[in-house]
Length: 272
Image 1 (cartoon, rainbow, N blue to C red):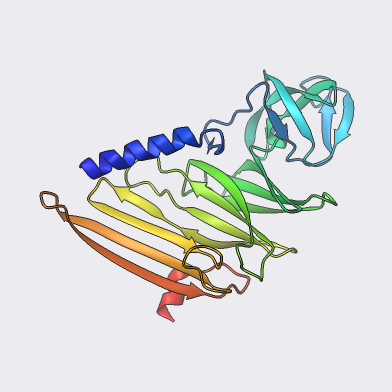
Image 2 (cartoon, rainbow, N blue to C red):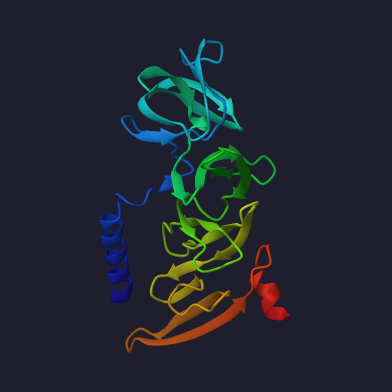
């Protein structure tokens, strides 16, 4: 049990240390805080004089335009199946209103790629889809890819260059936050090849107290232990067989992949 307590303490410590660097997003608690800067997820957004779709348009704003939230309004507007609040915002010394569904929940950039995110209701499977928009910084052209969030309620995002994988330009990561024992704390990588954004590989990290754990990681060519032009998937399964003697059984497996432009099905690859 002491190992689990130490793990929780370390996790809390790391969360505190990186609180300013990592932004966690909750599907059931969507908020844009006053005095914070956000970027537009929507394109050709109508920046309105009042919190209403019937009010005058002050200006039409392009995707990734930066605004500062001043306050949250009581009025709402249904967009992408979600009832979003209106927000009073400032843009280049002008004050107006934009609905929350047109603001990006977070923004990450690498090279000339900009990643923006928002939510929509998934009417077929239930829950939410995360909408990922990959924007070209120079042209502002963008592509959109949905990802169903059934595996997580709290997550953060990050971006990287190609990490030595020459067939792609950069990558986007959804990093799940495990809220409790038995909840998946893994994530999913998406690859940008310069023309399309593709769901690439998903991994899992799960702990059940100090009795069982499953830890998966993706190793890229420039990572420690990486292999040139290969993706290495490593899985560790462990369980405590005797708590008194701290006797553990650990099984480590790994498999190499070559990226071929489609989602890497781990089980299918292993069976071939």
